[in-house]
Length: 261
Image (cartoon, rainbow, N blue to C red; front, side):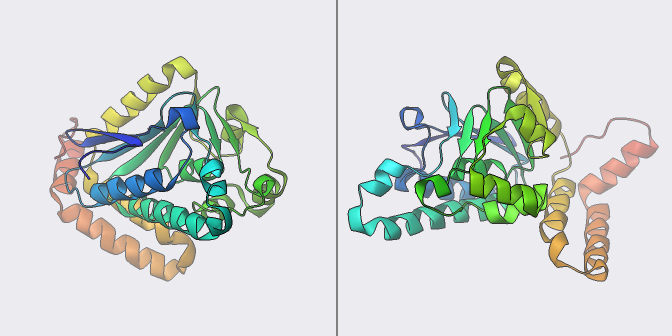
């Protein structure tokens, strides 16, 4: 796709920026947004020059999650429609998790349902002070999607995950930070600048090294110690042989800033 209806996409050098762009619908995920997000995430996976992807929302919401109005409009076919939404969202999440580039999520407002789930997929998650987080699924008679049942127990443990999913408790940005759901909370007016600072750091950083960290963490909970350390040995060896590894070691020994590709 060269043009999108529900997202905006900007690419500058090694940095891509994706903005969920249905502000009048609270950036709710309908079949168009889901399909477009899966498409652009797939492009990011295939881009060998990309180092960082920023994901945020337009307007006052990050995303209110699945578009319930669109679901209700399906009548008796809602289940089939929702399955398609979930499949597209999950395809996007898989691409974001497996791409070499780091995913920086900027939560600029409410993140509910699948919007909450999507935010948790970030390698680094920054939130504005006005951001709020709620699962909201069971309130609408639904169950979680968007990887929530994968990410949340790993991030905050089973008990807190149960509380969020069964009670639909809303967390403030400060509470989300305390619960280890986000990495940093900044004043709303400073969110864009904080993201830009982080992006500049990653854009100048070692792509191969950061990609290796992502891949190691993705499978760490399913491996034995021996399996994971074998994987670590293979990855650090490959990093040492890469141009970034060569430059990084030389820069460290030369007491200078590295110039990564």
